Length: 244
Image (cartoon, rainbow, N blue to C red; front, side):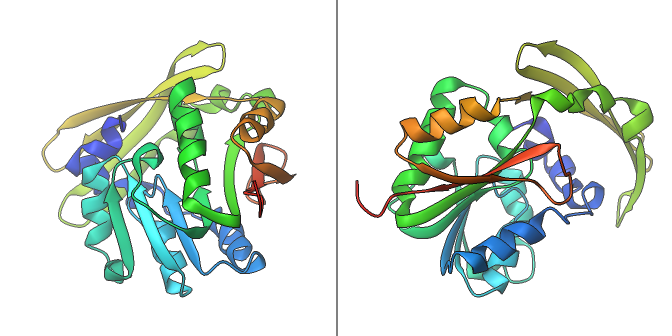
């Protein structure tokens, strides 16, 4: 189930406005070139920012997301016709054969349930060609990123065409073991509407993720740092073997 900020049309339309710094995507594009990928699957593609970047590099690209409102935004963007958009998740994909599968930003951590996580890894594995790569990031729990999820650290005000000023901030709701729940609040200046969206992320240890990948048949090639958050995230580079 997608969070409200992705499912609600008014909030989905704001996603790119409040997430303008996507410097995290550059290394993923570089890896597509590094691995010689000609086709890609972007899992949890959201409003299509990365899928469109991949397609712009000439890759045959599929974007999948469970939030129809986000896909509506993606389909309305320039170049959207170059991407195959699928409403759903990686556990129920049509037959695909791609060179690269990705989960950028919070996508991997948003899959909190054990069976859903295993199903996602398995779905990506089955979509990959032998020798293809799965690349994704997940925050290092030891860095306790949630301690900065306060209004003081997250408050923003942005202008959205046709909507006017929109104010947003985050605050922490609960930390229960590896599960961290928080709430985003949005205030629309034009009409005063207040919308909230609750999210839960699972913070997995490095060894736990490596074991989950191995259980699904992957070979973990390496674990890199995220250039935009050095020392704060694990970037897993896993490969489907050429032969079973």
